[in-house]
Length: 160
Image: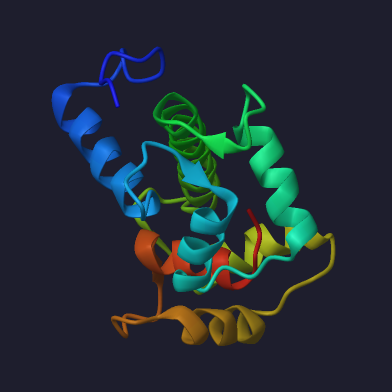
């Protein structure tokens, strides 16, 4: 498994080493490629729900040379794409949070949440409803939503 593959060229040494470790975790039999069965086993370990058709489609997307397995370069490419997608989602969440944090205090108050939700769903949201939403995610008990709590709320509601 050469570290100078096309996808790994643009990574620093630590990132290449992390990719090698991750690849080795998937490559259970250490043959330098990840089979469909190896991928299936790791996804099951991670409690990722999928059916055979979804797994086959995922393999087709990753296995760009069509040899029925994922080599290190293909693995690096998909991991890079997944990281870039995660970074984009993070950027979008931060943008939405910033748009709701009207007074820029890094927290969303019940009133700020009420205003944002009223605009979003185009129906009046009461202050009581906003307080109820905050109570569901407010881990630090300050009756406001900080960024970490906002991320929890976003994923609970499956917004992104």
